Amino acid sequence: MTVFVSRRRLAQLGVGLLAASTMAVFAQDSYPTKPVRIVVGFSAGGTTDVVARIMAKELTERLGQPFVVENRPGGGSNIATEAVKAAQPDGYTLLFVAVTSAINQTLYPNVKFDLNRDFDAVALGAKVPNILVVHPSVPVNNVPDFIEWARANNDKIAYASSGSGTSIHMAAEMFKVRTGLKTQHIPYKGSAPAVTDLIGGQVQFMFDNMPASWPHVQSGKLKALAVTTKNRSASAPDVPTLEESGVAPFDVTSWFGLIAPKGTPKEVIDKLNQAMNVAFDKPEVQQAYAKLGAVAQKNTPQDFSQFIAQEIETWAPVVKASGATVD
Image (cartoon, rainbow, N blue to C red; front, top):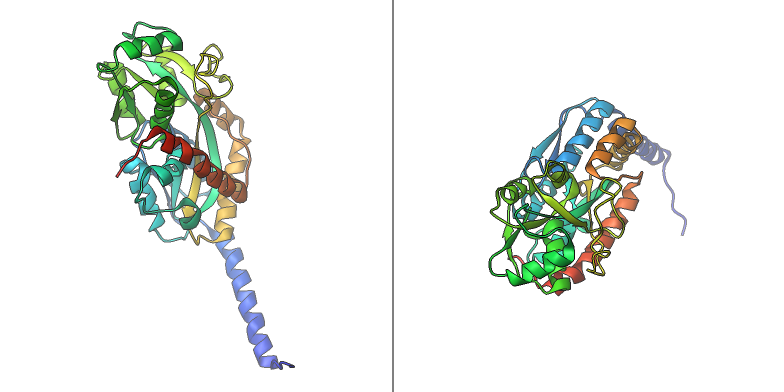
């Protein structure tokens, strides 16, 4: 069957395509025209917040509008994630997501978001190791002695986390599964208040993101026993890994990145991604990351999307094996 299209209709189609193309270019060239919110699901001072503020500063300088970090702690970052999911997909409300949200997909039976379905990935911002730290009063200096001490004091000690379902929580749960410990979990609304109580002696140990706890190790307020990654951290080369310390297998890395509500224009996503990748090459950003023990590599939105999907699959069996769940 032959289909006839009038010249007028062809002209209308051409105008429509030109308009769409022009709007796409305009969106890329003009964005942003007003301040942009980067929502963080944890309190100020924690690792997610610190890394988010480094990126916010770089995006502000690169794109010419303020990128403002807004802390919305609670619910293991679910409150912030749900808020950004409901925001307009225009690039002016973004989420600095952490590994926590990938864990929450399994940890919370009734979670109200799906990272793959409800968000567009922008860029992976950083990876950092977790570190096992203890209060100075704990009478041990290595992991084997700590396990022996903890078993003898199971009913008297507790560990802190930055919230139920965070990588800090799940790293400790994995440690408990590997060692048979049954210590009490005390969740906080972020790493900073958890570390404060650890320093104060209200809890005895914690698996924290290295950037938040390492300065307190250096000052003597905490003791570091091991890192959770496969290899030692370049920022703390004298601290052994858990696998070196006899707890194997064990390889846990926290990560952070930028995502946007589903349907955000591709041109905006690409512009944000390009700006972040430029920032990763800057010596001052590399130095700031090095001080945190963080590592960043250039990546595409597609890379980050695939990474998120893989992380959800990776953490699901860990959550199930630990028996941890949050209503």
